[in-house]
Structures are given as structure tokens and as C-alpha cells.
Image (cartoon, rainbow, N blue to C red):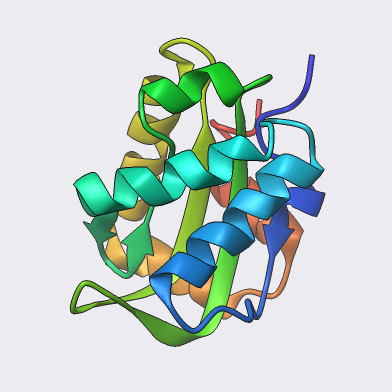
Length: 144
């Protein structure tokens, strides 16, 4: 079974300057690691057009539409941290977590991310680190 989050899925100093580029960047990690087919990235962009995936505390969690679920081969996460804030519909985002879930597995994943990131101190700690191990430690419940 593929792990939901591994060190290689965690990236620092993302290159994106727009939310669309950030979605493509994090989506590409999901594609590279075999969690989704390449069409899933388009479904992530479509989801963002329907409703913003900004969650507060400088966090966005882009994911595909319901129709995009057929493009998911395994549940997984991709974490991209940005040095500079991205404009996400007028909100600042520096932590982007791409998510792909088989069936309803993504709902549990979203819940666990929300618990960690509901505390601004946790998000700030994530933004300061350059260690994938530290990020894994913070998301240990979703890394199982």
C-alpha cells in the first residue's frame, strides 16, 4: 500500500507565483508519485473555480472535483511550502497541501490536516522548517 505522505512529497521554496501555478505544482507531485493520473490536476483547477480551497492560517488544500475521483489511484498528500505569500482570492497562502483520496478517505485526511493547521502556531512552525522530517512529525497522524 502506498503511504499517504512521505518525505519526497514535501517540497520547499515553491516556484509558483499564482494560485493556479501552485495547484499545478502540487498536483504534479501527486502525479509524479503515482497517486493520480495527470487529468486530476485539471480537476483540481476546476474545483478551485467552483469554490476556493483556502482554509485560513495561510493554508490552501486544493483537491479534485467529485468527477475527478476516477483519476485517483491511491490516497495521497503533497505539501508545498512557499517563501513568499501567494494571492489566493485576496488571502495570503504559503502552505499548499494537494490531496487525493480514494472513496471517502480524503475526508479523514482533511479532518486531520485541519486539526494540525487550526493552530496558527503549527502553521508558522511548518513555514519555518526546511526539514521534511519535521513536517512528517507534525502530520504524523496522516503519514500512517
